[in-house]
Length: 180
Image (cartoon, rainbow, N blue to C red; front, top):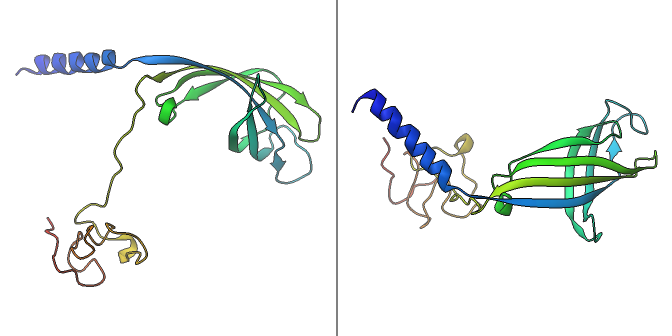
């Protein structure tokens, strides 16, 4: 097969894979009930870093949806766009925009932020299989956790067969793994 034919096959194959995936649009409106704490001086100022764990509530019903946590710098109280990039579960492949605004700021770190989000997610959530231990790979720092369940980095599910190279596992399993 000529190189040009191979490139054409790869391009057409990628196009077919891309076209096969469908997306659905989601719209969310929620508020963040913020009371961040800061490091350093009391209060917040432009350029400070804030650490937070704030409740998230539905914009229309005030029902608590969950919590967000993290850190961020101080921003001016002006509306701004925030990118939506990635997600898991029903939000697999999320891409879009949230319009952020401050609804209230009492000056004592008690803020209410609003998010009006529009984004797309893949119609069928992505769900890759969980990876297990690799045969022939030595345990971390040469030691297996004796409290971990099998299979682990040293023993197969039966608890007896080795899944790592001879000399790399504690104990002496009955069957030795074939190492390349």
